[in-house]
Every structure is written in structure tokens, then in C-alpha cells.
Image (cartoon, rainbow, N blue to C red; front, side, top):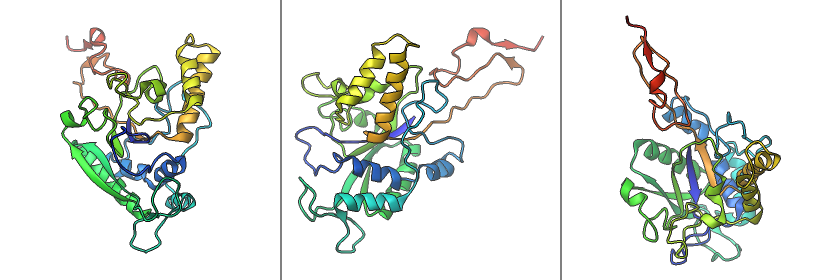
Amino acid sequence: WEHVDFGINPAPDYDRPDFFEDVRVRQAIAMCLDRQGAVDTILHGRSVTIDSYIPPTHPLYAEGLTTWSHDPEAGVALLEEVGWVDADGDGVREASDIEGIANGTQLEFTWHTTTTPLQEQYAQIFQQNLADCGIKVNLEHLPTADYYADGPNGPLFGRRFDMASFAWFTDVLPPCYLYMQAEIPTDENDWTGVNHTGFELASYDEQCSRALAALPGSEDYVEGHKESQRIFAEQLPAIPLFLHTKLAAIRTDVEGFITDSTESSDLWNIEAFNTTVP
């Protein structure tokens, strides 16, 4: 699943305005993004947008999630409520009486991706979406090795980014741990954590821990995972974008071939393959 993450609490020496601590800014950006339009343009409509870190078909997918459909007018209204206004009419919003941000600071930041064509293409679409909401986005596409370099120097796992997008694997177990406070990469854990957004919320940690400590199928397991998703969808440490498509080709005489989105290889059940050729 493809997603874009906010640098909510970056590394201490990564100096930039605190754009994303206010959840309303994250929500406004979600509404400014035309995720379905990107799917229709780049993936020819062959995927779906998502609102959680697991697919909608997953048995633990939570009902009643907060959804953020493409609604730039609502996004703009939320930005102005925070204090991001375009007083000079130049098309880029500036801070006006926002706590911790100097008046006149432009709402301008960098969106990092790798150099893969998929990410370059949708980043350009989203750059225009955000420009339509008065947000100036500078795109930076980095080679894979540089992008995923270990902290403290790597942009992603060193928490040195504004917004950054990439893909996590889907899995049978909902990965709520990705956004737990204990997973924030820091000097103390030798930059080994995966919560590079720096998101911290006690209620989220409580529900995720509840699920991870419970037996599968138990009430704590089910409700802990579902409540974690509800908090995630409302708080948006990251914006889920869409599911990747999984493509495979086989000969017409091969039987037993089954694609499985939770398996990394299309040959996961190769022992069951058979051929109808005598």
C-alpha cells in the first residue's frame, strides 16, 4: 500500500517550521489530494484508494473510519481556520497568528519520493492538487539507496523530511506498530524504529498495544486493532493513498496458480502447480 507520511516531529536538528503538528493541517492536505484521480490516471482505475493501513477486504478492517475524500474547498477552509491565509494574493498561503510559526511564513515544503516512475508521476499530480489549495510543494526524487539510508543521516529513517511517500507491504497482521511512540527512530534506539513520522498519541499506543498483546480472535485483539485504525484515520500521521496492483502471467495449461496479496512471491504455492498437458 502506497502512502505519504508527515514529518510531524522531525529530528531535533532538522530546522523547519512546525507545519504538521496541528492535525487540521494534515486533514486539510488529505482533502486537497485527488487520490482517486491519481489512481484513474496512473493505474487506469485498476486499484482503490484506502483509509487505513490494511486493505478494505481485510477481516479486521474497521467500520466507521473517518474518510477524507477529495474536497479542496473544505481543505482550504480548514487551512484558513488554522491561520494559513493568502493575504498577498500570490497563490501561496502564509502564517497569520499561528502559535510557534512566524507571521508571513509561507506554507512551502518538500515532498520526497524515490525515482521510481510510479512515485514521480503521482507526486506531480499531488503537487498540482496542493498548489490549487495554496500550498507550494517542492518535489525531490532520491535514489533508493539514499532514500532508505539508515538514520541519523538518511532522510526517511533519520527523520529529516517534510513529507515522504513510499510503500509498505500488506500483511495478515495489521501493522499498527508502525505509528507507535516506541518505534520512533532516535539516538536512544540507534535509529532502528519505523515510526519516522514522530507521531505520538497515548490513546493510539494503548489500543495498538492492547491488540498486539491479545490472542487472535479475542475481543481485545479485534477491538484493539479496529480502534487503532479509527484513531489513525482521524489523526493521519500518514495518508494512505492506494493499493498496488499485483500482476502475473501463466500459460493456459497451468492449474493451481493462485495470487495472494499477502505473499511476496507469486510462486508461494508452487508445490500445488499442475499442468493439463499429457
